[in-house]
Length: 491
Image (cartoon, rainbow, N blue to C red; front, side, top):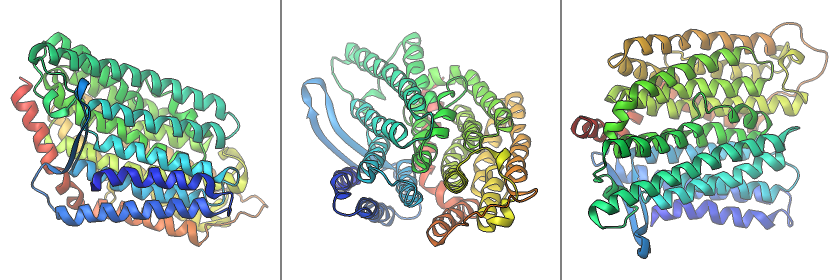
């Protein structure tokens, strides 16, 4: 039942937040924090029950009949990968609420309703092991995010929200077709109608059918990741989204695409995934380099950070399809570390926009003198994003490159060039926004609430860099299972 409550608590919190703004302006904020606090207690309980290094692959399950006529079950399950990603979701949920505290002044209840329902959908995605249920939660998380961008976004919010919705909805429908194709082919061979993950793992597919169905899943997940050439929705969505929306979008929603590749594409279609690996790894390397180049060309701070997200998620794509233990562990670490660092950078960008009413770095300058705490936090997370040793991003990217080098040295060599481009755009941000002559205007520095959130994010990034084994131990069983699947069935 604890898995079900992880989803129900933010759903109930969102419903309570909806009318709460009529009674008191800040009531929805406190209700959202209370709901997230309950979820945090549930997550900590799961960590305590599983121990520091769980040996079993699946740590908890809930399985009920839902629509038996069509073989659809309400099947939730938790492994180490899911547990870490749910912890990241709840952690960044707190950050999203706190960074929106003074920014969101209109329809505050409806904002927190959509924020909590997005988080509930994401948690459901990380837990669902019935493919129909997975698709259901996939849709649940999209519509509230569309509303967050479309209602509380900036000047071109309608365009950005519609572009986000079209890309994700069309790719989601493609995934639904792939799910139905997989279920139908499994039914033809077994005469059993089922959407259950464990039963579909045993599906005996012709290589040609497996290849096409795998591509349906692959496109849906790489649109959400996103990877070149499916990335064009992301800069617009990030640029126009409110700060809380950007935190959830960069820190959590992008990770659902990476999770889908790890949970469904590789285990369900190991042979097809191995055949497609050179193409997928090449797309990962292209994403790393192309997005880094585009980041350097931006003057809009949020747009620059959005392109850096595309670049960093290219390492995840590279690691997943390299397919060995080091690369897969690196992909997971990159997901976690990027979630924290990208969320922090978007919080900085949102804070600067709230204070300066602009995202244009040409209109900034000298902010280190005017707001030294903002400058120090930006420098820390810029250094983290470029892969400084001792911080979480370095561990993830190093493991990805180490693992992928064993598979394809040429693609890995090109991907490694991203480690050269990352310092360029990081220093570009610091130079343009924080150094040079200071403007005569006053800029409010981070206060206690904002610094408190940022220091927690700093601590999380440093912990992942200095004690990565505390994270890797939770995903050992999952990663070992994937590598065994590729070795046994991918021949």
